[in-house]
Image 1 (cartoon, rainbow, N blue to C red):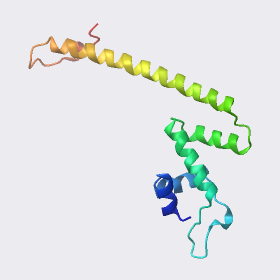
Image 2: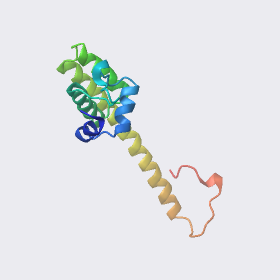
Image 3: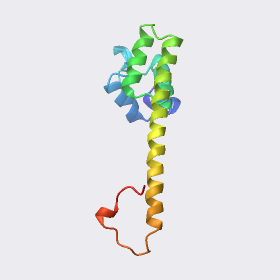
Image 4: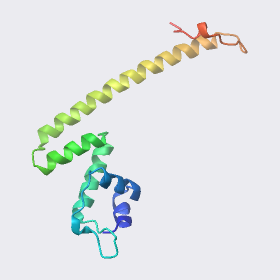
Length: 132
């Protein structure tokens, strides 16, 4: 399969596929290059890219995905291990949500304090402190 077909089948751009190849996330067999210097991507690369896409959609970084692919390739990634890794991701998301919520609350307090100022009031640096 040529890179254009692979791109269409996976949703990754050609540049992204080339980048993944460059960093070793996907590996082509040496015989993948045709006489005309085009690359013929085998079915296994399509499956790898679909797996990468799934992990990316779940929020894993490229380095984490690399580790997952290695664990898969040596056949030690089982359901419980993947479940634990997903739980770690969920915990990280929960922490990020809490930080974002706290930031939103802070912005709301600042905005409320600004509403109490007169229109056209010029903000001085010492005034930009917590509204609480």
